[in-house]
Length: 241
Image (cartoon, rainbow, N blue to C red; front, side, top):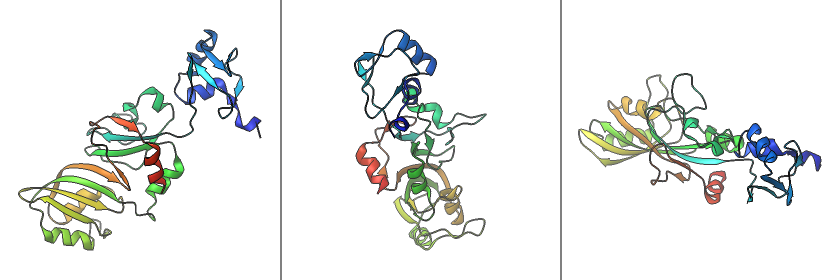
């Protein structure tokens, strides 16, 4: 059992973003890595992240398997791990975070901004995305056209999209009604372009869209578009339910 819990020092340090395996080999050669107070002599030595105390340049290394990031996704960036033509959200991460190989949980359209969760925890991602869970997602939007209580009533009943699909009931709150309206909308599913298509179904057009909450997690409004931060332990616990 103990052997299964160990792994190569260079692989472990690379996994948590200390550097590439080539860079870690150089750190070891320069006598900048210690294991339990002793200089590491071989980057390929096996260590136990749970039991061994590992330091780089005197700083204790914290080993983690999973990473959880909240990003305020900017417009013009794709919710993906790679794309041949466009910038993706992973491109916005610092090396110490991208080293964990996180992926976006769900997607936001290229021209939509707001809350995007990135993690390498596949179990949690599945839990949040499962259609059976009906995890609520709340959006702020600017709408071309006067949004009325009749629209709110239609959304509560579920509207029929352009392909004939009737949506689950949504909760529409009108913040400002006029030729250009402002609203908040909570939906419980994630069909393709759903918010835009729901408003098209009632004869209106979304001109700006921002996700502000997913499940119990609300967007940190101190994050500028393109910025992100790690979730707190409390936020992760909330998501896990």
